[in-house]
Structures are given as structure tokens and as C-alpha cells.
Length: 227
Length: 184
Image (cartoon, rainbow over all chains, first blue to last red; front, side, top):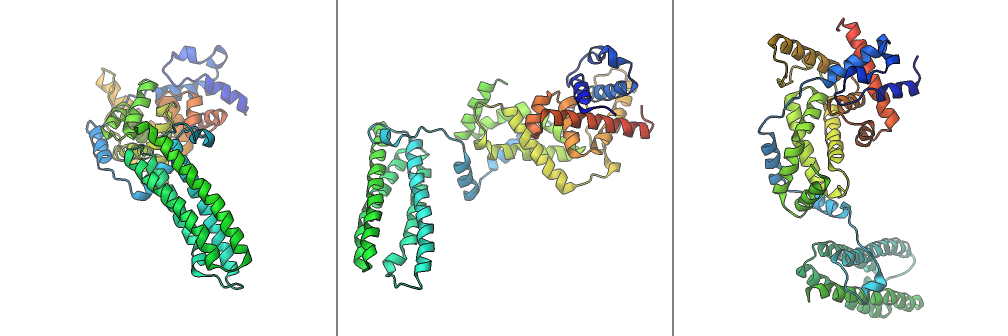
């Protein structure tokens, strides 16, 4: 029985492209009947005449390509899975022009943050619900975080289109976000009269306001390319 | 086709110019059709699978990394489409093996030699179809497409050693089948 290493060496001697059989088989293998059978089969396959595809095949493929309309989910999936390169430097983004891709990245990251926050709040408030009475505005916090996340990701994806309209949308989105972060910081302690609410509100404002300012600043720097 | 051209064409397609995709279709429809034909033994299936493979490639073109070679990527997409088809169709009836093959362009001048060649081709296709799919793939890529083992490994996801072993096992099985049927 042949060893694997011998088989691998034999396979190296059988080139895929057309070669002179004498050249293929080394002298030591030329006399081996088993090798000669294997070599003959390989040569037979290699010498099979080529088959051409039907003439109309290319046109039929293109008809399907032209008619292809991806579903919203496929398009969203493709947009998210498409490899992109963007240099990310938040400090630089505050003072010098940034690309649409970089700007998009920051919005999507804020979206990811609020998704996680929304899930944590949802779990936390669910557990809290049985032991503490929470006002409506506080009970809506997880949903507010998730909606914010959705809006941020949507704006981020739209920014990938790298257009003026996307820029305007992002600017409005960032301003609304900043305003909302401030209002939320005021409403929560007003609505929820427990000692910890002031701390929570402060924390939420400390995260929301600088993020909002950062996004607005980035958007302004991104807009410089259209100035 | 030069790699730089492919990168440019793919960039155009991703930018919304669907017609640019026809350049890639024209360049690669032949190899993809032949691959599907050898894998399935049916011209009709090969036609459908080639269309499907190009459509899949078009849909997932965004995942292709510009700078890499397009052909191996397209081959991998095509092999996945063919594997799925074969999995669904499962076993091809041995009796139909080779019957769906279109007439090939036989370079032999002598009509009787050409007829013998065609018959040999049908028998060979029959043997190929009786091989396990991964072994069949390796043999086709190596001897019909003339790929190097490194390329076969990258297209099929095997190691180079494994690709070589598959090719050997394929040739050995064909040899055994030929011997069993008294074919020379």
C-alpha cells in the first residue's frame, strides 16, 4: 500500500495542463503499470474536448441580473456585511473633515450603544416592576433607547450613501438626539421621586449630551466637503 | 482578464452600473458552464446552475474584497450553488449519465476517431458522476480546468494535501470502475 507522501508526490507529477506524457512520468514511474493506468486516465480527462456554453446563455444571465430586485432585508444585510475601510479617530473627527464612512461609523456605534442600553434597561425594569412603582415615562425608557438605536443605525446606513440629503438628515437627527437627551435628563427626576433617580438622570445626561455634541461636531466637519 | 480591470468592473457594478457585470459574465460563463456540466452531467442543469451562480455572485458581490482574485471567488460561489443542487437532486440515475451532454467540439479530423472520442467522453462522464461530489470537484478542477493544487485548495476550502488525496482517490476509483467494466 502506498504512503500518503508517495501519493502526493505522484499527484505533483500529473500536471493539470497538457504536457508530454514522457515529461509527466519520471523514469522510475514509467515502468510501473499502476502508475501508467492512473496517468492514462488523467491524460484521457485532460484531452476531453471543450464544450462551449449555449450562445444565448450570457444574455439570459444578464436578463436575470437586470430584473433582480433585492428584498429590503437582503439589501440591509448586504449593506452591513459589505467590507469597508474607514479610519476612525474620534479626536481628529472633532477638528478636521471626516469622510461619510467615518461619520456613519460613529452613528452606528451610538446605535449599538443604545441597543445594549435598551436591552439592559428592559431586563432591569422588568425585575424592578414587581417591587417598585415606576412612572410611565421611566417605564418607556427601554423603548426610547431602542428607538434611538434604530434611528442612529438608520442614519448611519444612510450616511454611507455619502450625499447632501444624508448629511441634512444626520444633522437633524443629531440635533433631535441632543435635545431629547437634555429633556430626558430633566423629565426622569421630575417624574420619578426616588433618591437614585437624580443620579440616573445625571448619568444619562452625561452620556447623552457629549455624544450629541460629538455627533453634531462630526457632522459639521463632514459637511465641510460640501462647503 | 487582468486583476486591475476586474477590480474596476466590480467597482462599477457596486456603484450601480449593472451592465458592467456582462463583462464578467462573458469572461467566465464558459468555465462556469463547463464546471456545472461536468459536475451534473446535464446540459440543462448546467445552464440553470450557471445562471444561478452568476446571479448569486451578483447578489453577494459586495462581499468580494477588491484586490483579491475574482475567478477563485466566483468558482467558490459556483461550487456552492452546484453542491446545493446536487444535495437536493441527490442521486443522478446512472442510466442517464452523460446523456445530457451537448456535442463537444472535437478537434479530430477522422469521423470514426471523433465518434470513438465522444463515446469515451460519455463513459468518462459516467464514471465521474459515480464519484463522491468532493472527489469529483477536485478531479474536474485539476484536469478539466487545469488548476494548481493551491488554487483547488483555496476554491474548495481543503488543504493542499487533501486536494491531492482527493484527486488520487478519484483517479483510482475511475481506474477500478474501468477495470470492473472491462474498459480500457
